[in-house]
Image 1: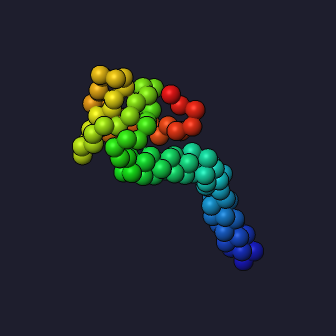
Image 2: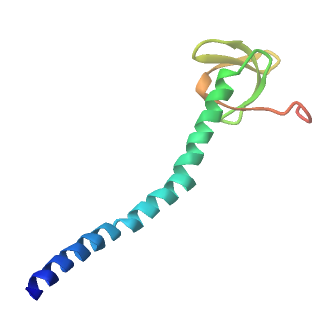
Length: 105
């Protein structure tokens, strides 16, 4: 009779130990989520909002580092004036950020 009780108790602790072995993996996932995934989602959302709010006359910097002013907007492209007589058409996704108007030339 006592061997039956030991067998039942041993089975329950094995299940608990098995479940506890997943705790480190769960903690690693939570850390990755808060340190890598969530900040990347926030950056992507912010960039999408920036691209949606572009308008003529905005001073921008492309992801390649080219400074210019938007002269025309299409659905997928942006025409950027980078010098007096030089305009470049780029894909809208390559607009990196808006420039500050203070201190820029």
